Length: 344
Image (cartoon, rainbow, N blue to C red):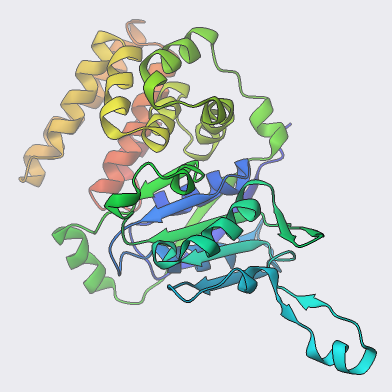
């Protein structure tokens, strides 16, 4: 029985379903996530809207710790400041920190913080603990997010950035998307995103030969640490994106490795016929004429339906195609996913 919860997010941000899905993935698997992108693409606002979203239709009472970092930010801002009132009135030395009791932790502009602050952050990220002298304080965060404009070139490969299991480069909107966003103004968009529980994730099965292929292709980008996480990430992605296991594997490959490896994995695990269909669908996105694009799209849908009826494509490949259609529709700014509904 599914115990998946749903987050209902109301936001003025447009074209940000992918960010909210990634936040759900981070929350459901307990891994820190890093959003990298230029100013103004909605990194921080997306996190705030997600943290304030409804859970199963009900308001939530999540506490958020937000800090804007720079070169002067010190570890004391994580560990807490002395409680002067208690020290003065009771003679008891105690520190006050919002971090341990916060459900959501947001570290903004993390690339600007110095080494001492980042080192203090590692135990919060990895062990959910704050170590302060002889004190060990447990942290209870459900979602840990950091943002930056870019990872400094001289720090690529630094162990700190490696601790972010999930990393996503947030793209700028296209010219067409910006035109639509300008027209819509401050009207709100509502996203409904599933957040699977540990039991939901456990109940998803990944065929053994799929994981063997995943490791084979991704080997040079895998560590002993992130291969342990990979299986659960794939299972959670399968639920959140409502896609096939193959599509989930490709998505996780892009998060753990790079786009090139994800494309290579796609070519390795897709059948020849499915690979052809994927390429055809991709080519449509470059057709400027909407009428011609529509005709080519319908042609592909009809072909897939026929191939499925004649057992050339499996049920899973049909599901994979449906998930591609949803992505295609989203890219075409069709928020109602009308094209996707044609093959439901």
